[in-house]
Image (cartoon, rainbow, N blue to C red; front, top):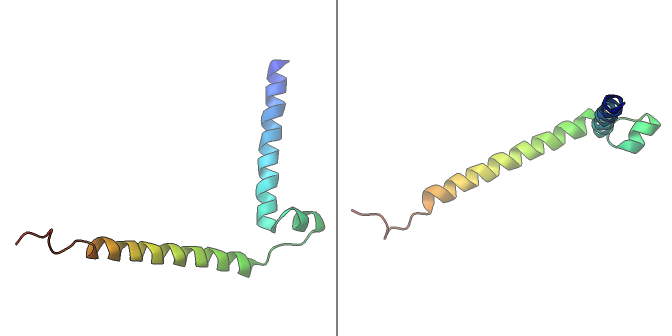
Length: 76
């Protein structure tokens, strides 16, 4: 009996997770229930914007790390 309950809990957890992922891909629960889907362009644009932001912040961090050494610290 215990194994059956644990199996049902595991199955319910898996399908809850799958439904949540499916709703995220559809653009939310309302879009999932009404049959609408998110436009591929918007999700691709969001991904590209995030990647560009991450790249620019990494580049800015590298510039700060290279240029942050004061001249008084450098021994000649």
